[in-house]
Each structure stands twice: as C-alpha cells, then as structure tokens.
Length: 281
Image (cartoon, rainbow, N blue to C red; front, top):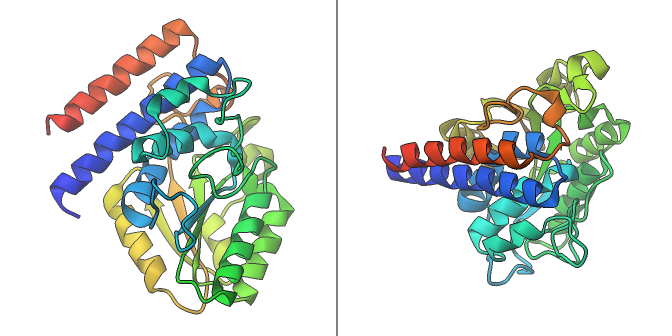
C-alpha cells in the first residue's frame, strides 16, 4: 500500500478507537479492552479488504464478517459508522433501550451486521456455514470471522475448525485476536490455548502470524489468505488489549468496564493527540 493509504488507515483506526470510548462512556457499560485491541483489524477489513456497500448493506455478493467475540462490538460499530453504514452520532446510543446499537451484534437491527453473536464460540461455526453456503451457491464472496484468544477455550470452536478443514473452505479466513487477556486474567493462566498457530496447523489450516497493529503485515497476510486454495486460512495477530489508551493497555480490568467522566477525558485527549500526529505525518 502507499504511504498515503497507510496514513489514512491509521487515522481511521484512531477515529474507531475514539468511537469505542465515546460509546462505552455514554452507555456506562461495554467492553473497551478487546474493542481497542481489534480496532486496527476491523479498520483494515472494512476500508481495504472486504467488498461491502454501505448504501446496500444486504448486497448478496458482499463479503461477510462475523464478530465471534460479540462483546467487542463497540469497535465494530465504530468502524461501520466511519464507513458510512449509519451516522457516527448513533454511537452515543450504545446499549440504550430502543437503539439499534445493542451490547451484542444484532443482524436484524443494525446495517452492516452480518450475524447476531454473543455466546462465545458460536460465531466461527456460523462463519464456516456461510462459507460452505457461498460455495454451494456459486458465489465468490469471502467470509471473515474474529475470535478472542480466551474464546478459543470453547470446544465448539475446534469442532468448527475441523468442519472448515473437512470441507476445504478456502473462502473462510479465521482471525484470532491474541491480546493475552480475558475477563479473569491472563489466558495462559485461565486455560492456556498455546501454542495457537501449531494447533491451527494441526487442524489443517494455513496460518499467518502477525502484529495486529501493523497494516503492512495485515496486507501481506490477507493477500496470502486470498491466494490459498484447498484449505482454510487463519491469521493469529498479537495485539495489546486496550491499545491506544495508556491506562487501559494490558489491563484485564478493562475487559468489560466503561470509562468514567475523568477517564473519558484522558482517553479522548490521548487518542486526539495520536490522530493529530498521524494527520501531521
């Protein structure tokens, strides 16, 4: 990608992170930590990788995205708003009664949401089913799904991965957000999933390991995914939980807690400074 394109992605990712903070602060609830760790990924997907049309969210030939770790939907909402699926001010209605932006994705309410998720482990199963259905229908669309590293402690995840390999779903891309933390602490202490890449390879996946905050590495990994035939592809991205907000970074306590007024001001000041730095590059 060009320097200008990369700069634009970086600026958009900053705005997505600001959207996460705005939404969770307004709701006084939500999950900022994992939303922030995946902000670069959802930015890349919706602004560079996926074929989508904000003016026609139900376009049948669009690529699909399933947020398997559905609790981190504040980040997805922020990306969809930046992409033009709905007004950015809607983010301030997060989790409110009557809002189309609830605490977990609802495909019946929100433009751009391809699957309702929330029960951990189930999203990847749905994504595999979507990929198989697309093949049967002769469609060229691709299916992407994002899981948390704590989420892959669920047994259903591995059943879905076995299914994906059995049916040679090379139109499926499974992405693991390896930020190392879950609600109860370090994933290595709660129930270690490591070594994640080796396990995925043992289940028949081609695997790329990347820095989940590096757009150049993302571009290389997704290009390799599109070029892989006959087997499903997985990307394991090493990330920082709470990325972009100093007091949230690498803190398990920010898995599911909203910032108060003082914390909101600090976070927005930091993210605004990052955005100004990117735009001044």
